Structures are given as structure tokens and as C-alpha cells.
Length: 404
View 1 (cartoon, rainbow, N blue to C red):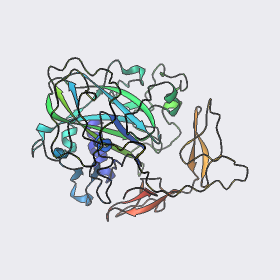
View 2: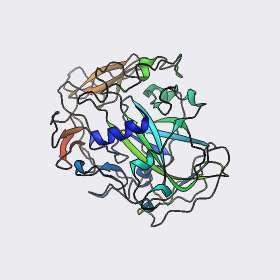
View 3: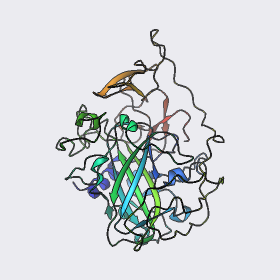
View 4: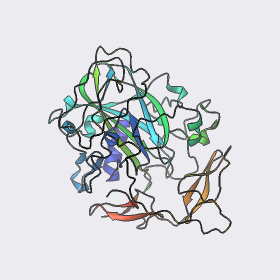
């Protein structure tokens, strides 16, 4: 199945794909600056969350809502036609899997470039990995758009610099090839993260590169979860998905592609999104350092963390330093605590990595489905989350303290 067909099929089958507020999600796109990161504070009002993609409330109608109209978001970066799109992904919770990238030329939207972006527009341009990107992760010749996400230990081997105001996590870098013949005053880049901890994706079993670019994760088992049994799409086996969008321009005379971006200045404080997009200037690279930012991720010293209920301490009397949920608790070279907070147990995910996972109670994990019309799966949630009704068709496990 092609990437375009797979994206369309999963979009119809899953009913609800959440791109979550930065502070609560598993991953987000830092570069190019995603709508999710740009709108961190401005869109955290209760019931707002207009800076992320979600499906419509009536799944049977088959149309999906992709945030707000494009005119609500500034174009922040410029790339060269046929050049390289370097993507930096911040991973707060590692769930194996891979990332794919898609591109929509906003001029192709039926209601004009300022309207709401659509999945059919994204599907016009699925992006392939750049040919020289093997050093970030091996390229599957049968699935050239897949970027197998870095195992957590790779954070000690790769660039981990964060933009000012970005939320913490491990930074993974991938390079994608932009298409020839596409220039735009506004293109919307879409990142889709397909997790790999609940089912096997098509092509994983057949993908056996001669080597893996890591000394801490040198084998396939360190990158691809081969323990899970069902294949994605078989029965009720579907992966979690996390989606981000970013607004860029592509010029015909911008040069060969983005140069390494220096650390930008701390953005000026402003709490509301601008009314009109900024006008990008043609440049040979991603120009984070050249635009005057109008987005304002709040500086660290002024940011108020959401109020959350802490996880309970371990009930194991021998556990002096319990590891938090979904954090590392073992693996090659790991020298920290190996016991977990209450309700979790240390589970080996690969030779190099073990993680505190909920005990086998059959409940849905955070952001997973827990109810809704025709839902036949579990109606309970893992510790630290509660089942929230999003619509008649979809109930979701929302972590405590998340913006609902």
C-alpha cells in the first residue's frame, strides 16, 4: 500500500488522530516551527486547542477539521525548490515507530490558500528521505518516506539543542527531499508519527539494513519493536498517531537548501497570534534567524506548568527511588533506578532499553480510545489518566492536568 493510500485509509479507520498540546503530547515538530509550538500559549484556553489537527465530531460524515484557517498562522521559514527539509522532532515519550512527512501547496486548496488545509492536499506530496540521510537512520528502499525514530540512547550521540521556549525531550533529526517544480508563498508541512509499540507496521519485518548508525543501539531490535504480535490494521490493532503542521514558503531561487540554523534570539513576549501571516523573504535556507518572531513560547522563568496530580509513589518497600511512568528503567549502560512508580513495572523493550509500563490490566494508555459508538475495546485508562467523552463516537484517555 502506498503512503498516500495508507494515510487515507488510517484517517478513515481511526476516527480521531490527536495532535496534542506541546506539554502533553508524545512528540512535536520543533523545526520547522510547528503550529503546535508557535501557538503554545495562545491556544491553551479551555475548549480552544485550535492549533492542532483532529477529526470531526461526527465520524460518519467523513470530513475532518485541521485546526483553523491558514490565515491564522504566520509563514515562518523559507526553503529552496527541490532542496532539503531538515526536520527536528522533540520526543517526550518514546513509543518506537516512525515518522512520515507530507506537503500541501496552499494554492491547491479548493477554497483558497487562506482556508483550512485538507488531508487530500497533503497527500499530493508525500516526501521521501534525502539520499544522504542514512546517518540519521537507515532508509528503507521500499518505504523511502519513513524515518525510524531514534531510540532514547541516541540522545547522547546527536545534537540536542532546543529552541528557546521549546518543551524538553530528546531531539531526533531527519532530512527530507522537497519536490522539484513546487514553489509557494505558503506551503503547509505535515508530520505524522506512527507509534510502534502496539502493532507491527507493514514492511518492518522485511527491512534489514546491513547496519544501524549508533553505537548504543547497533541492532534492528534496538530500533524496531519486534515483540508485538499483531500487524497494524489486523482486527482492532492500530497505532497511536500524532500529527503536527508547520507553515513555510518555497522559492525557486533560494539556493540548494537550508543551512544549519544558529540559535535564534529569545522571542519577544506576546500572547496572541498575529492577524495576518508575516511576509517571508526569499533565502537559501530555513531562515529562523532572519524573521522577527511574532510567536511567543513563554520564557522558562515565566511559564506556569499545568497543575497535575503526581503519580503515586511506589508501593514496593524496597524501592527507594521509583522511576516515573514511561521513563527508562534499564538497558545497556543504564545506571539509574530499576523500580517503577505504583501501577507500573519495568518492561524490557529491547536489549538496550527498558521502560516503566503499566501493569497488564488491559486498559487503554494515555490519549488512547476508551469508548464511543461501536467501540469494543477497554473502557478504562492507565494510571494517571481518565476517560473523557470527546463525542458520541470517541472517548479518550486524557492525562491528569491536560487541557481538554
